Image (cartoon, rainbow, N blue to C red; front, side, top):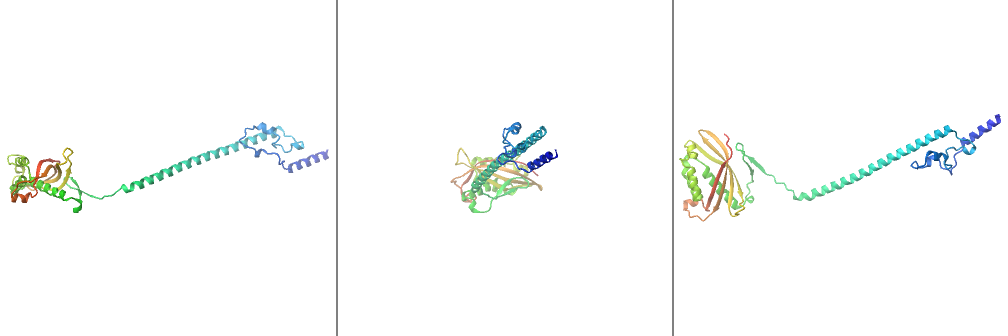
Length: 293
């Protein structure tokens, strides 16, 4: 009896030291994604779940249950890792596509900006705002190349006419009347004469009298094209009026729309000194914008 037990123990020890056969595949070498069930694995003779079966040692039901649990855990573990790997792989591909698209958009943007750069130009300018009236104008440098001789001549005669017509001083009435007569058409001069008549309660003579004066300053001249008749010369003149009456000053902006042209007028020598080129105003309309004291 003791000899039999000793032989059985020696056989078990020999079996424990023996490796599984190399021509058979273990479970760990099988594909975890295979559709093979656990029972098929247990009954598959090519899978060595019981390496001692060839020596007559049979697995009991507990060993089989334990083996089933191990197989199930191994299959779940392998499946989980493979799912995570596939998920990360898909994310990597999506991020690679997004990165490539962003790079292409960036290159297209740089190319567009590079193409538009020659079309961009910077021209600094100074805007002057009259403190009390609020009239704004662009300050141009005093360079004769920025303005044509014809425009300079028009600017001179327009402002000379506006200044002579809108200025008021009790001792200078005759001179202003002469300027308006020589540089205005007959109809415009007649309107001016009626507006500045002492019988007109809104005239400067009636409102300011001998105790007041009126001067104009800060001219801003722009030219308005006439779509119906391009030959018409129309100017928009902005200026500031300063009235002084009994040491009280009133300043307000005013605009004048002037239609003018040059004619071969029959003028005397003294009249030619006032209007040497035959400048004549054909229409004159003013608008008083705001009043501030």
